[in-house]
Amino acid sequence: MARSIRPDMFSMNRRRMLARTAGAGLAAGAFGRGVFARDGIDVSRWSPEYIRTIADTIEVDTAAECAKVVPLDYEGRLTYWYVGENEASSEIEKEMERAFFAAFHDTYPNITIDKLNLGYNDMATKLRTAALGRAAPTVVRLMLLWGCEFAAKGQLMEFAPEDVGHSSDDFWPNAMKSCRWKGTNYGVPTNNETMALIWNADIFAEAGLPPEEPPATWDDLVAYSNQIKQKTGKNGYGLVARVNAGNTPYRFMPMAWAQGGGALDEAEPQPGYETIYIDNAGTKKAVQDCYDMYVRDKSVPVSALTNTNNENMDPFTSGNLAMMISHPSTYAAIVDRAKKATGADKAIAERVVESMRYGLIPEGAERRAVVFGGWNAHIFKPDYVDGEHDLDAARAFVAFMTGPEWSIKLAWAQSNPGNLRGFKTRWMKERLEQIKFLDVTTSMLPSGIPFPVIPESTEIMNVIVPDMLQNALTEKMTVDEACEDAARRVEELLGGI
Image (cartoon, rainbow, N blue to C red; front, top):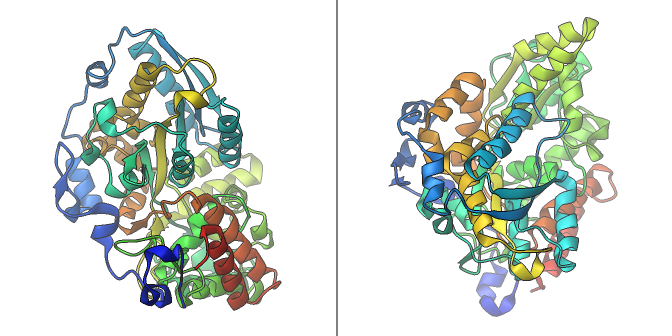
């Protein structure tokens, strides 16, 4: 039985409704229909082949476009917080980040940026504290899940693509939805990401599985993981269940959505975020699959309870893990690891690179699903900023960052340009030629589902969902009890019924 929240907005029949599955609804979800973006992109034809046909079909002059927003000789200063490159980043990601700041300086030599690169798991907490202390940055780049919280608190400026020379139609509809709170726009998308299933073809062959064929369904993945463990002694699937880490919902929610579950009704074609799905049959099936792999079959790392996906990289590189869900950048990162390895480890890592394969995330009973993720640029209101609030410097910076050129370059190895025009540039063609498997992860975009666009999403996804998994995997609760406990917590968080 689905639980509804904020009862004043719903009839008794609505509050008692069963949680519906989302149906097909794919085009209505991540993409809409027809042609949009100023240079024309037909999303109804979206496929690896179509993406290749539109690459390198427009020319972009970033400086000229930015000059229409803020003069290039403008003098100013801004503070900027972001989650950038780290030790786990590939070399090309590090190079692109350095190039971005150098290019902005060349374009706007009189604008000074005081930047702070924070860790993924630190950003939201530190930004909350800074905003409360009136010491937030002028510009911040936040994961889609986080921005709504700060907008709901009244801390972000009303701010749209049109304020920096773009059109809202130049961005994915779901990306724009993630920038809105109560009908008001408060950000501009920088990049959008979907992940794919990665597997080691050699381990598949060793386990007696077809090396070039990924599991088609989540039931198949559970069975593959067990067969790999039984036949080879290696871990089959890189389960992630750490609390307060974004990696967990990014890998669990596709399982739940695929089976008709969710946290709320976010997988519906027209979600209202008022009905709880976290204890429906679909979500319970997904938790049961995790339980079966972790407890029954013991086919996943025992450290899954404390792992992020970074902890899956070493066993995958050493040939001891067969499958994981991750970004296109994982290939580049493992190539880098193979180059740095020595002796026998180097030979093993190089062989893993040769046997890496990317494929679509498995389907469930209802659909194939993946998190429609990414990041947005936001501007804090002057009252919450430490020091001078230079709006024109911020507008120049966001215009530069979210245009077709740097929208794609900053997403080079990891995701996709937020600005749809980026798909039509020569840089997209270069990426397709340079980054192996990029077309596979990009082709997952039509299956993308965003997290609920409500301020409580961070708490639901980063705490309640992982706690639910932990309760089931440690057998502190049964699967049913864990899901029902999560539903009670969501209901309480959102105001009850």
